[in-house]
Image (cartoon, rainbow, N blue to C red; front, side):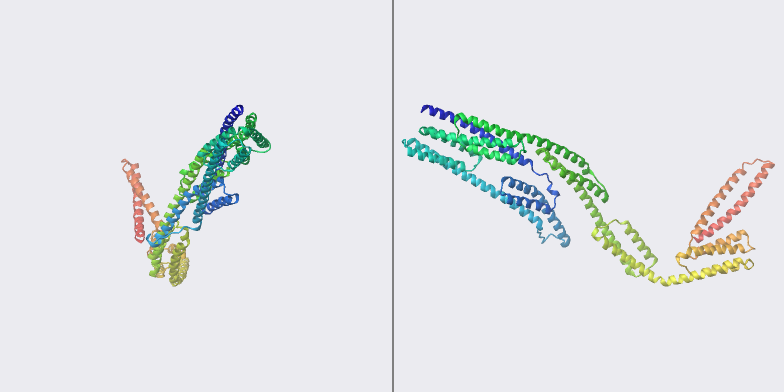
Length: 634
């Protein structure tokens, strides 16, 4: 009997050590599974998505939960998504409300009476987020209730086990009583195994108490030691089967990669192994070492796979870092051109597409920080672009005010009904100002242009309708002037009849005829001057100076009558040039005379220069006279 008790104590000590090892491995396995799930968090900037895309994301998560059943991993992922979207939704709500308030104030002039209701998509995002949080809270509340229930169940089982031990201590050796006690004990074991998890702070204490009470029970049941040994051998067989299962899992890695499902199955086998009672002490450690070797193979494969995954994660990080570094300069980009901004936007979007195309995950902390910086950089660029377009829109609003004023001015001139030269010039100036003003908001572009064009076109249509009679008169004047020119040309051909009196009559007749169409004015004037020049040349008894004087007077008279003065301007410039040249020559010749010595040769030279000076002065007087005539006309 003493030997059996000693063996029981050693067995209990060994089982206690084994149980601590099992609990440690269970914590490691759960931590690794949690870490793997966290590594797969998506890398998305939700502020770049539309409302419809946010709704689709949340609906997809709810659909997965409903189709796969409520699981901690799916709930955690969905709740994380809802939490990430929350600040984006708050920003959308604020932006929509501020926009609506601006429109309301612009229409009413005050915020009084303003009421705002978010659109259906915004309400849908809010509703889906609350539904996800509700599912998560409901699930974890049920889990906590289940754990609390399990705690109460296991506490009750421990109390039943204590009561059983107390009865064992007072009961006489009765086979029937011992048998019922054993059956009650096995029932408590089965119920303990069936009970679920409890809150972790109490788990170790309950297990320690449970194992201690079981040890006490087996120690007190020396008379039934054989049953205990039979049970241990049965446990050994079951543990051997579990060893075989985990070994098969390890062997299966030769033909397939490590997955979460394999680790989950191993964890399930591990749970079964934990709940089995002790095996014979000579087999206990051997079985555990066998089980642990196979389990370590799975862990080593998972760690090796994670090492490869870390390498891939680092490669993804390096590639995304290059994309981030390439996009940083865009944060300081600035331009006043819409075309250039759009071109830069295409470049930025190309980098964003490259970023999104890299689907692999990155190291958790570094990747999270890099993603944050990348999306912040994108946001900065698009903020700057938005600021440019806001300023552009503000400038266009100012342009709209200017063009509205131009429309009002043009309509006011049209309303007077007066098509005077001054009003015509005003309309032309308004058209010039219109061209100088920049673009207006796109939605007003056509209407404001149509308004201005209508006012201008109406003015000129009105002016043209009033000028039809004038144009008919101009055409008659053109016919008469051409007839006069032809008669002058005929008279010039008959030199015997040419005289200044007849020329004077021609000039009087020309002056009496009114204006001709503007398109014919220059051609008619040139032909008239040419005819007069020909006629003057035909008058034989006039000197060349008199002929030149007569032609000049004819041109001056044309200008006085309202004809173009461009020809006289050219003649004026020519005379001024000749006057300047003569004045320079006279000055030079007068200076040269001062240097001549008193000699016969010098006297002849001096006389020659004086003759030149006298001739030049006469020409100069004549040119100045012609210049005065031209300047009076102009």
